[in-house]
Image (cartoon, rainbow, N blue to C red; front, side, top):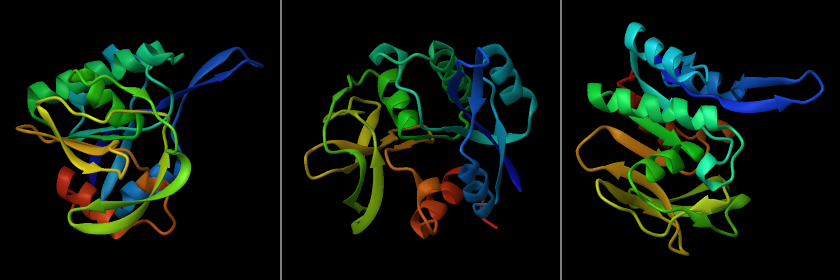
Length: 201
């Protein structure tokens, strides 16, 4: 098994006056099936980057949840942490994969402007991925219909919304669907993660 640093969403418990880092339990099961062990990164950028530097991780997974602070989100500490992790991973040429909000983080970081979209939150969609049509889920309200270098569009929905991106020269990929929420897990997604992070058995 290989270790993978995984970002977490921020949840607010007003009853107990706490801000909590949280990770969907389905991520552990999905990553384990991909021969990867999740190492949750706290939303403290200095600690998260230190974890990246001292742990034998094979890359970084930027997960979903929380709108970006630049687009009205309420978790600026998460934006700061993920930006720092992305920059540190880029310097070391470590693989990075962004899921939903994670892909939005990649787009924002590399200069793509996001806009509000409709018809992409809470339903299933058919997308052409690597030449094959497949059904995926969709839970986002922010997206883009263009992409700026060094990213290129890998998958685009029928309405022009970009659903997956890749970096031209670095091992950086983003997808807008949630592979951990599919039952059963899709073989195509497992292959993507194993190939991207070198987690093949």
